[in-house]
Length: 198
Image (cartoon, rainbow, N blue to C red; front, side, top):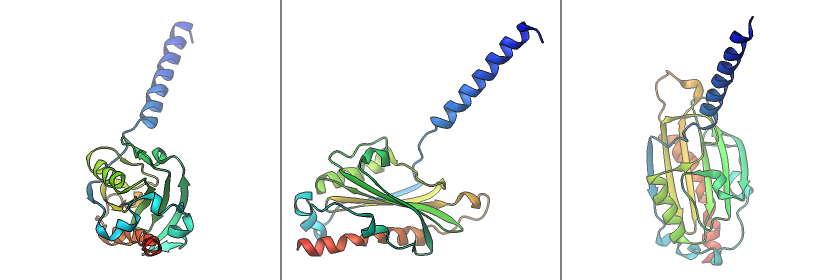
């Protein structure tokens, strides 16, 4: 094969590989198809500030069980840089993000809790999640068939996100409300902190 053919062919291969790599590494981060957010309430006023609830969060508080509501736990991790759990938005003053992923035969999802300085910061994050950016998707599921719920609980924010699992493509969409409720219940682990601060 002559050099006149080899050099343009090699250049074309390099260009195709570069474009493919760009698409694989720069894909848009997904948002849920349905989102609802709730600001903090008077119930959590006693932990409205990290100064009144200074102990850091632990994975054992939230993710000790191997399964929740029929969803088995796949991973759990603590992130000291909250931006590692978010895209398109910031969480000023956040010191921790705990995240776990879950799956069943039909759905997959994640639960994330952020440790923010106060209730105002928590409410601001819940509002921002509804406008632009979101939590990073930590396990594969169809975001176009997904639901998410965020709650400010004093100076914390919990985000629950579930969607149709990747193996269910083309099948009837399962009801996402039961797994959403099941994972959202992980936020109840905050209650002992409320009682301790009362």
